[in-house]
Length: 259
Image 1 (cartoon, rainbow, N blue to C red):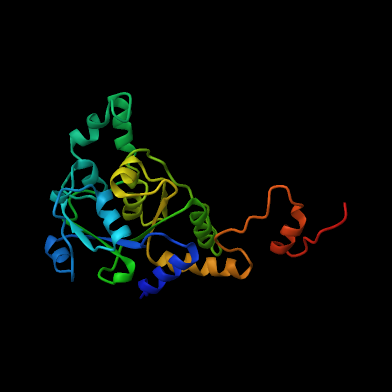
Image 2 (image 1 turned 120 degrees about the vertical axis):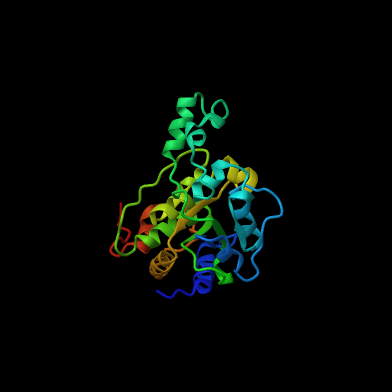
């Protein structure tokens, strides 16, 4: 399917009043293919993946990274770069006493993470959807909880499906881009401490990751909802008002009745 990602990104920004840039991710089997992308930027320092994502979502950069650009195995493991998931990583020892009470707790956390398999890719590119520099495997955007709920309503407008998401805790990038790259399924996350400290994620932001084609489905759903008067941001009705008049606007036949 040919997607006009720039148009989809613009519609998404308008419908959800986004404060940051919708972006995409693509893994490359060969470093040379990443380096051949027009106007690709390469990190000049060692970063977390959260920082790479933040530079794209907040500054509009197209960035290519390899395992050597990332600070350690935790960042590398989620996107499958550098054969990071060795015995030391799996043990969780580096998180014991920091995020988890025991090595056993840390090991269980590592096991719970959704990650791209090691050994298949040498590089990853993160780029704004509107830039048109990559054909992304997944599209991502940050939004408030209210905007995320509206986006999900749009996804569920036709071909309804209940969504079940996970919260791995710290390293929640495994709940978003890790899960979406691995499974191709829509993946919503509550960004973790590292994403907020190093990636510039705001307190009221959540992260959605999903195949780009699903953006068109969600946008069509949100436009249908808007046609029914259900729009974001949500107009507050009032916590002490008689609810019947408000319900009558949204649901045909729900006209106010006496007493």
